[in-house]
Each structure stands twice: as structure tokens, then as C-alpha cells.
Image (cartoon, rainbow, N blue to C red):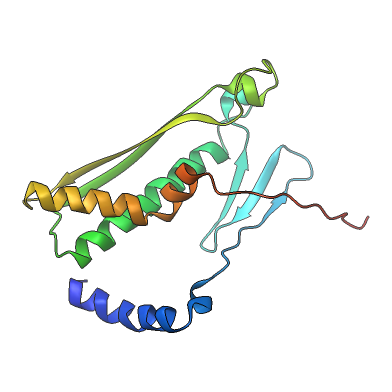
Length: 171
């Protein structure tokens, strides 16, 4: 896909959103089912069913997906797609690009070993390796706009409010 093809796909969407901002507000959903016998939750990704379980550092077997890894994977996926979309829109040719993320987690918090240990990542590092002949100023713009428009990065770094609700499941 080139910049013209991307613009032609997005132009009518952008026009509709300018004319009626309410049409730009969408709701994304995820759902999972908790395993009856093991400590796991199956999540339907829309493409596959992923069974998440405890990380080995918390007593898991390592055979199931770890939700912390999945969070980092979502960040990498979003950052990679955003990078490619921005590069396409700016007509910046990328020969190769790799995106990686790593996060520091003190499992004492989630295991309740130390009340002062945080539950959750202490820090997350997102890294890009991009091969391109584009001028440095174009690459700086590419990374700046990727950061600005990556939904998962902005959500994590901005600390979106999260609410929890509960319903009683009939027996």
C-alpha cells in the first residue's frame, strides 16, 4: 500500500468524523472465560482463542500465555502498525523494521509477598530498529508521530481510567 491508497481509504472516514464527531467514538471489546478446573482464562481474540495463565514466576507452567506478555505484545503490535501507517502516509520507505518491548515487574507485589512492592510494571521500554535511507529528520518525525498516534502506548503512558463492575452470575 502506498500513501495515495492509504489516503483514499481514510479520506471518507476522516470526513465523516469531522462532520459528525460521534461517529468516531467506537467501543472495542474483549471477553474471556475463566477455566473451571485450572488457573486460566481463555480469551477470544477474534482470530484465535488464547489461554492465559500464571507466569512461571507466579507458579504457572509456562505453557499458557501470560497476560503481562500479552500487554507488551499488544503494545508492540500497535506500535508496529502505527509505525507502518505513519511511514506510508509520509512516503517514508522502510526496508525492515522490528519493534520490541520489555517491562520490569516485581512479582512480590502480585503474589502478596511484600505490600510495598507495586503490582504491575514498574517500567516499560519500547524499542524500534528501523532500516531506512530516509533523512534523519524524516525518521524523527516518523517516531514522534508513531508515539503520538499509537493507541496502546498513549493508553498505557496516559493512565486511562479503568472501572470495574460486577454482576452476579446465576447458579
